[in-house]
Image (tube, rainbow, N blue to C red):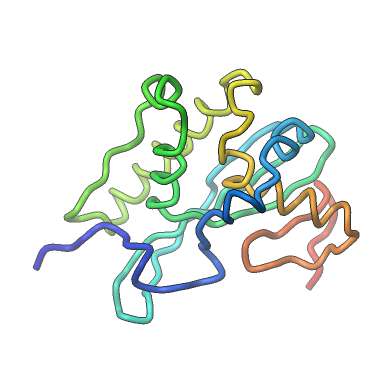
Length: 172
């Protein structure tokens, strides 16, 4: 049996949503207002959809210079959507790890892909911020949701992100 790469149309989960519609993204504000210190991918998890298809979700930990920290959960297909939404000249500067149809759930492959996706994000964030204005990078990293949560005073974590100040204990 040939395994297929992740398919966003087969299920719906709150842990790995698609990017919000363009009209609700608040893209310019999200990237220019937040000074991101680092983005890491510390963990990944292989899950099973309602129709029994397996997929991997990568946890991105975003830390800002002012000490805010949150996590968002993304699938490879969401990284690919982000990459394809970038302007051509930016896309050409940073290759995306290739899609793979067989063996994409082995620990060795997923660990290697996690490292490649982290390198991709680091390369993307090294680009001049002005080149990222108007792109989906801020939404992809959860910056727009974090900005809204911060401004509304709502500190309850959602299925998409878990936000807290650095060195602040996690609520249990």
